[in-house]
Image 1: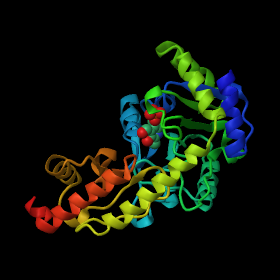
Image 2: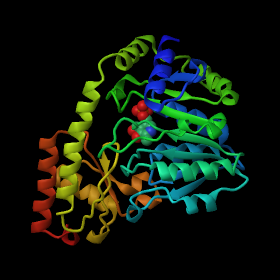
Image 3: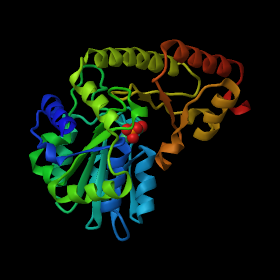
Length: 325
Ligand code: PLP
């Protein structure tokens, strides 16, 4: 309860919403909330809409549940914004859940207030569907942009599942701790799934999570400032690489350049970078079929290493064009 109360306080501070701690479930990592939500709302005969390219676990668990995975295409030309007309065209009576992720892994996209209002308007017209808002990167945002949480919309709150945790804001990925805010009608089912699998989140980690929330927060801002510097370096330098075109990301710690002009597939580029140059990136195709033609670069690494990696790629393309690689 002490941790759930600390989460409720944090929600009030950052999302300006009063949440009863009884609606919060502490779980071992962010993934558990999406796993529970998709399992309970998926299954044969159901359809679940999810962002693509997107965090790969969404599609994987939807398929596992037996539901039809319906991708919502995100495109670099649209700055990886959610296409609301496309979303509207995908919703039907079978749609049991729609997944949103802002700021986004892998695109670095961020849903604006204007788009969020439109999305919520559309959701209001479709009361049969639940909503999963994955807000795990909510504190990692650039250019003084504001973060808009789906919790700010009381008209959808009775069918909103919110996912957040400590993995990104506090770099506590290895501690395995996250939380979900659940609608009253689903929380008991989620609790039962938890009791039947992991029982509870280990107590020392819960105390660490309280310390993270109640302790000084200035280092989160310092971390975001460091990410911001790396983000700008990546944007500038990647755009100088032959065949690569990069958008400026707005949140999270990822950039997703298009590599279409190289004439090679995302997997091919990923493997050349890894095996010839010793640079780890992730092929866009790992994030769904609409990720083909892109590459995800993470800037959860030092400025020095990022500069070295980008120099290696640039030197390589000056010597050898991608086609001969
Ligand atoms: N949601 C998104 C969009 C993520 O990128 C991640 C981790 O990469 C998670 C959820 C899961 O985080 P956790 O490590 O806390 O399970």
